[in-house]
Length: 377
Image (cartoon, rainbow, N blue to C red; front, top):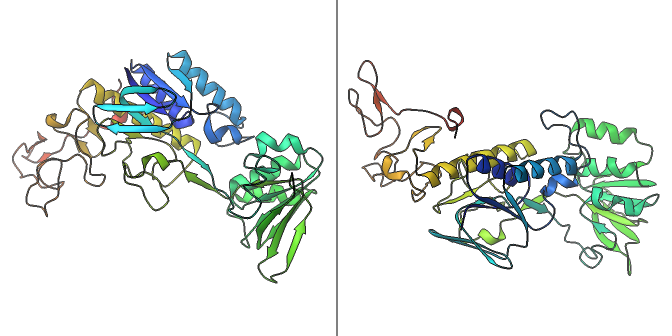
């Protein structure tokens, strides 16, 4: 049995593997395809610290090599099920892979248009990865559907490969970065169709045209293209977690910064975790935090939270996490809620040590704070 299995080999999963291996854990990453996740579909990454620009596939290769060099295994396989019973955590692929702890970092997958012709012509001109499939349509006309950063980046990349690129977006303004929009407007072979929606992808055995409709005039038009690249956002890959973990309206897991879930020994990291910013660098941070928390949990050592401390009784992975209040402690007379120290933060008498505090000068007991980032494994 391995100490830790990480499901997903994107930036969060690979970073978690690096930190876990450095902590001395036996760790394996399970990835269904190439390591790197959505990162590999980006031609130029320009906001990852230390690199003015780097190809996504190259950054993924370096992360994987780093993890392997520290002793982490990277396994290829489709995860069919997750058994999340405390004490019997198992990842099911072609075989059963038990572990003492799990980090779930499955990331996201591209959202589909859900229009006629999309499913039928998938792989025959309908693509969700411009970097992967753009070369197949060299010197041909293509369309990109979407208005965020991914759509703008895809259109800019395809403009260097294809004869003509038409970018279709349903709104009157793009949601992506202004600098990307300015780059597109300067490209002579890029046409922007704002306030248009894609209605149907046409073709018998391959894509031949894209039918769009002008939302202002309601007039329909057919764009003769050989490929349609879909870039209308992503959805969290959390289908295997429904019914096991709390998900928000978008399907992301609700968990604190260290990724701890309500299931003992199970952590989440990356873009499937609910948070305000979704970037490669924040996915890496998630992986580092989750791996650090998992390592301390498995070691049974003292776990320090950013907002305070945890009782000795809660040191093992079995402490239930509320998500808003922290680890469950005494019930106390505070609306029947479970608080980490038997009462809400700040509900400790002056002049005493409290349940989890050190006496400070003047007799004021406060929770001892020591962030995870201030300790090294």
